Image (cartoon, rainbow, N blue to C red; front, side, top):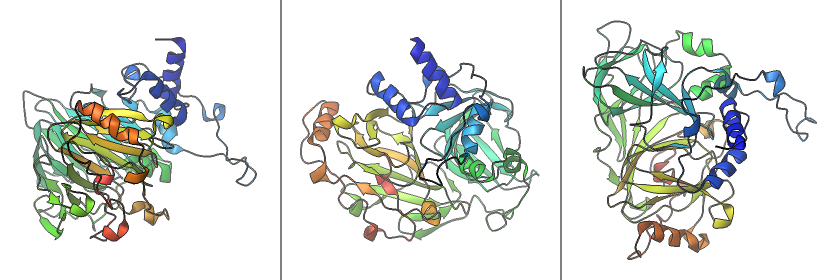
Length: 424
C-alpha cells in the first residue's frame, strides 16, 4: 500500500475526504471493488480532529459566506469509538467481521453509508445462548435476521410483547420502547441487520444523550398491546400493515406490470414509522433496470440472486466513469443521494431484494419527489453491451426496461411507491 493510499484511508476514517475524492479513488481501483473501506476495517482510527482545525463555512453566495456549517452526524462519526466501516456497499453482511461492542453486550459493526445523512445500517451479533443489553432508542428501526434464531421482547418486564425470529425474518421495535434481543441457540451466534434513522435524529438535535436517554413514550405507535407482533392487515393489494414478516425470502410478492413485465413487489407499514418504509421486489432473469436517480436515500439488501449495479454523480455513460458494485445474497448497497444508478440481474434466478427508503418523508421536508430516469431511447448503447458481456452470452429477446417506472400517475397507493426503481 502506498503512502498516498494510507493518507487516503486516514482521511476517510476522520471524515475529511470528499465524496468525489472517494469515488475517484474507488474508480481508479477498478470495477467490482467493495466500496466499504475494507482496508480500514479493524485498524485503529486516528484521533478525531478538533472542529476548530477543520471548519466548513457556507459559500459566498449565501449571506456572503462565513456561516459555520454544522454536521452533528459527521462530528459523531469522527469522535465515536464504536466499530464501523464507511462507504457505499458491503459484499456479504452475513460474514462481515463483527467486532467487540461492549455498549450493546455483544459484537457489531456500524455501517456509515457515505451518501446518507438520514439512514444508516448496524450489524449486531448476539453470543450463543445470550442476550444483548436492554436498550431504547429515539429513532426508528427495521430489523432483518441475517443468521440464527431467537426472540425480542418489548418493555421492562418479562410479560411484554415478544416476537420469535429466525433467518430471513423482518420485524421492528417501536420508537423509544425498551427492547432486548435474545439468542435462543446455545451453539451459534445470531446476527441481525438494523436499518435506523439515527443519523437524522442526531442531525436534528445535535445531542447524543437526548437520543439515547430520553424516556419519552409514543402511545400512538405503541401502548403495550399484546398483539403488536401478531396483528396483520392488508390495506391495499400490495400493502400490508404489520410489525413482523416471518421470512422475506419467501414472502408473497404481487405482480405489478405497470412497473415492467415480470415485476413483482410488496410493501409494509410498520410500527407507525414515519420515515422508514420497507418493501421487497423481484425482477426477472437476464433483465436490468433503467438508470435513474431520486431525491431520497435508500438502503438495499439482496435476498436472492446475483448481479451488479452502476452508479455515478453525473451519469452512467462510460465517459462518466461510473462505479460498479457486484452483489449477491447478503450484499448491502446504498448509492449516494441523487446519484444515477442502475441494476442488472446476471444470475440464473429472479433477483429479490429488500429495500428501505424514506417513503414520503422528503416531501414533508419540502423536497419534491421527482425521480429522473434515463429512458431507453436516451440510454447509452454501451450499457446493453456491457450487460451482455457480464452475462457471458448474447441476450435472447429484448431487455425488459420496465416502462413508465417512475411516473406518479401509475401510483396506486397514496404513499410514495418506491418499488424496484430504487435498487436491486
